[in-house]
Amino acid sequence: MSPTYEALRKLAEGLKISVPQLFTPPQRDQINGRMAMTRAGEGAHHATATYEHRLLAESLTKKRMLPYSARVRARHFEEFDGWVRHDGEEFLYVLTGVIRLYTEFYEPVEMRRGDSAYYDATMGHNVISLSEEDATILWVTSLD
Image (cartoon, rainbow, N blue to C red; front, side, top):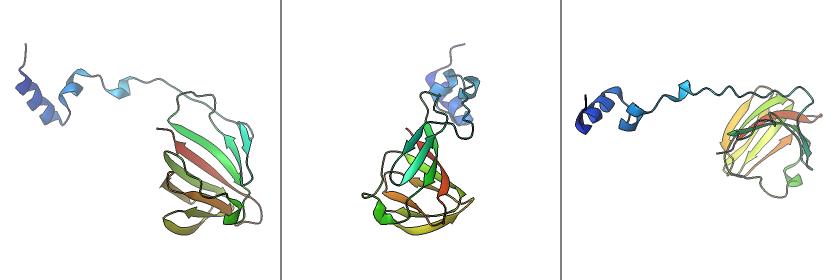
């Protein structure tokens, strides 16, 4: 059987997919089984004046996300040399303590354990700890 392009177009339209998708296997059939585990206290350590970062899942290459935990040492916005900004989007989850998230276009927001924020990382942002002890957070940054 050799269907016409018009017949293929109608079939794709009825299935709510594009014509090329009629000839492409579904992505879910292409499982690659990637996994990386980072045990507590492990992961590449990177300290700055304001944060102590610990990179997670560092053994995986070609990741689309960069997960890391951070101990927030900064207590005042003035400790930063301007805004932090970079490509991608970012997800922040407070693990311990209380933080204040500063963003370039929004009012500062106080966040506690279990609170989260998702934002455009090209927008200036900084985080300080309001707790007596350093707060800890989980950050996940998109890489594409």
